[in-house]
Length: 171
Image (cartoon, rainbow, N blue to C red; front, side, top):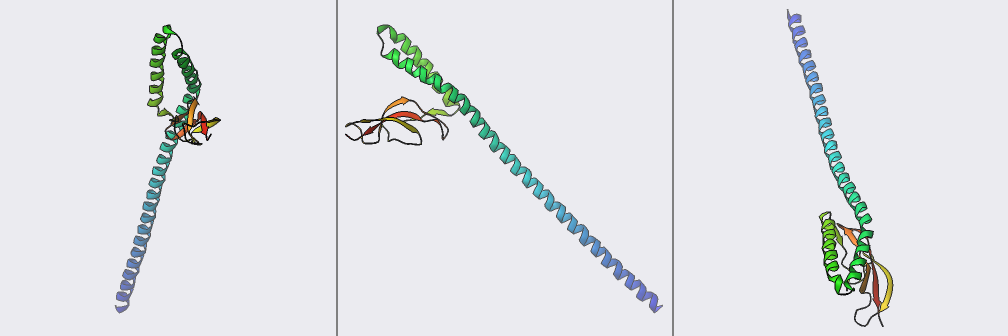
């Protein structure tokens, strides 16, 4: 009888050890699967962030392409407006009409975050200005924009086209 009791006790201990091993294996597999799920979720969130960022970049590029196409039209419009302003007495109604259309164009640009670069009477900034010529000036400090020949524009912080300017030099 003693041998039977020892055999049953050994089998019982062996069964507990096997159950403990199985439980440890299942727990380890569960933890590995849980870790994999967390990694996949993190990768998915990162992919979503990258995609949103790329959409914003593509949108800005599209608006920039359209704005660059319209900038040449804006230049010609500015020239026509300037010519009408210097005209005779009959040009007053033309000037007011052109000024209205000019404001509408600027509002349409602003709606898409395309804004003119401020240049007149400001220090020359090579990131925003293209110096076409230099002119001596006793009225302005050296390196000041004294005339804007073609208006520059920015899309947000990005320069679409620099302003073409005349820069003062010391007499």
